Image 1 (cartoon, rainbow, N blue to C red):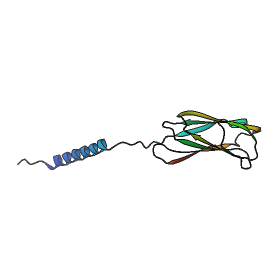
Image 2: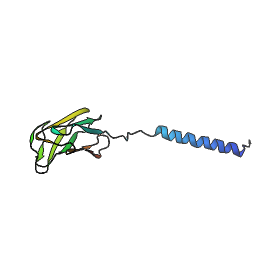
Image 3: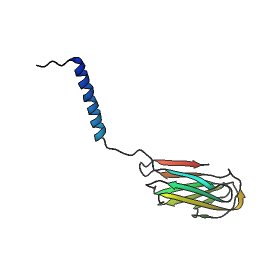
Image 4: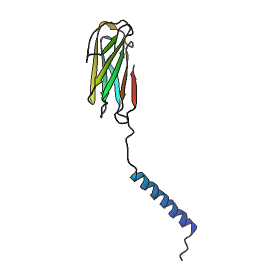
Length: 140
């Protein structure tokens, strides 16, 4: 019988453990933990035209809810796309965007009177299509 010195036993044991860990890593299925992001910023945030630009990653969610806040009592001439709800006394408009495409989306709002910079903000809600979690972003 061949006698193996202890220092070699430790070395072979270490190599064995590393090989097992590498094998476990290689056979473990990979799932993406990255969320499908939506980001946004204002192209125009004062005056009589407010333009919110959203960037929608691929894959896009099935729907997006946008809540736009403006000074209470402000009148609206129109919007593109059309808003679904407007609470003038609260200064809140809401859009439900169904089946959005990945890429860039502009939401334009046309006001009866100009508003000052810093008086508008938005919240965007959607379910991440990769993991189903509800995401909310705030755009100041």
